[in-house]
Amino acid sequence: MTPTAGIEGSGAIDYALRTEQLSMSFGPVVALQSVDLNLRRGEVLGLVGDNGAGKSTLVKILTGLYRPDNGRIYLEGEEVRFRSVQHARQYGIETVFQDLALVDELSVYHNLFLNREHTSGGWFRFLRNRTMRAAASQFLDEIGVNIPSVDTPVAKLSGGQRQAIAVARAVRQKDIKILLLDEPLAAMGAKETSLVIGMIKSLTKKANISIIVIDHNYTHLFEICDRINVIQHGRVTVNKSLSELKLEELVEFMVQSFRREIATKSSK
Image (cartoon, rainbow, N blue to C red; front, top):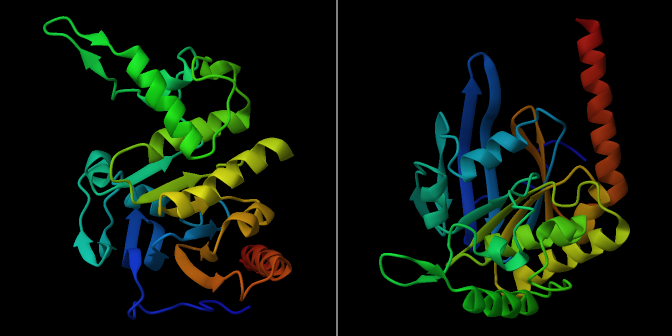
């Protein structure tokens, strides 16, 4: 496998998201160098790279948390410039980070409606718990999430169920188009991993959501993704579909790259 293998131009392909020459530095540290990334509609794209490669910086730019020094972002062919996380959400971009941002003491359905609660009344607002409970149950059934009860406190759920609820809360938002998942399968057992993988697959089919997944476990990515991008030193160096790439090739490529980097540092 060679660097920049399989990199594609914009062409006539229907992209949900496309970046051109995204660059960002933090003082003397260069985080991203002219990143070109494409995400097709309904596709699951895996991002692979060592710590410090630029994955997190790229995701934070796409979520509106960071503003790039240079480059452009296109959503469905139109250039956008995100001013904030809320602004990116208005364009249909949602993110689930590793900490999940769930409130353990609250029920599943209260977490699904967190900061977007249904209320009624005049000066004194009342939670419409029955309405939220029914809507939560219906939505989780539609996307294939099985939990004991929507009344269950999140603290009592398994790791996989908690992750599923965090993802469900993100995709429940109106007009969501792109979902960014940061290490969605970290520290999970086989059963929990299977639950989340199944959910991710169903989202692209049932909801036509385009997804970017960051994960250090390449085996997981080969179960979920349609295509893999490798980011190294702030650049996308590999862009291949799973039909063009084998798991063993990716592992060997990353190992060899790591060895070359160690050798380079040792020689200085």
